[in-house]
Length: 267
Length: 142
Image 1: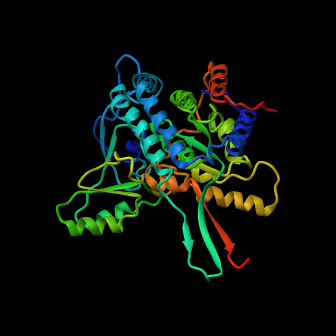
Image 2: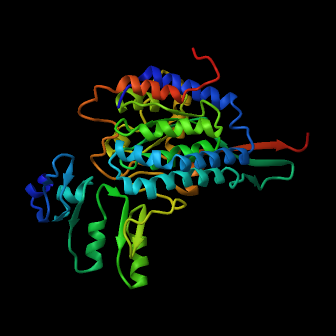
Image 3: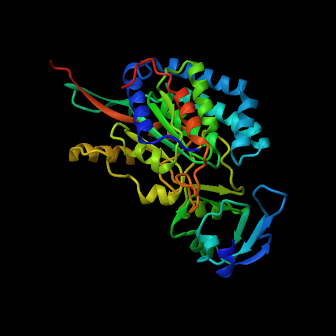
């Protein structure tokens, strides 16, 4: 599957950025965010057979495993990270009595997530669920080989009550969608699982647009401080395939569009 | 597997595609391969087990000190001191003692060392990676 290019990535990041600022997701009480994550998990279970079949038909996972492992784990990841939303407090640091100095954990803003083809639904959820529960907005680029369940999960998110624009899926390959995503100046944190060549060889990429030195440095630091995990291996082609499929474009764009149910006019 | 065999690996089982009238099937494969063989140096996304032997633990530690990768390691022994010593010495993100490949509980962090990655997925450790810490000062004398 391919389809998304830099323009669609730009649109997704703009939608995510605006949703982060204006949807109220970040400002909501953590228990409210947890409640949405629980409803999302319940919807995953209610659509469990559908998701298990979709994952089995469109990836290398076998139906026996998607039924008993991938679907239940996906639901539990949504619950687990929903529960995290109100379990980590900040700090009151030791200072002179004339001041209070407090530490406040905050979401980054827009998190870019790139997930692999080998256990697609579970490994995508392991990235977007904690990011969203913490109050971030996410632009997920699943492997173009296996994007289907991610798109379905985004539809279920809206049904669960996640504000439109907080979770966005762009369906495209590495050069056309992944690279613009990681280079985007409005993406504050990148989480990547894929090949060592992609992860270590070109990470972090230079900023796409000219920026002041201090801002680009801080962007690079922020990226490094988040959690790219490049699994061992020389051949996990998250960002590459020898022959792009011929049929993908219209579906990819339409499917991605379905997770862009933004209340705000774009452009 | 072909590259491994060409570089001297000894294929003890399998080693070839299986014909099931379509699809992409590969036979379960066991290969004896030395440390510098591609089957030891690269991850194979298929049912391939690459084997080396050792006589003393120190030999095993030397083999486990992979130049490039450090995702996970497994140790099988009934000697608890030896197991914990090995867990401390092997540079890998996950150590399995008397089991292998066990990462089924979502509260546990998953991720490798060296070029197998940095950061973790799963567990509370991953949640905290998606937050950043802001330090706010309040002057109480005003």
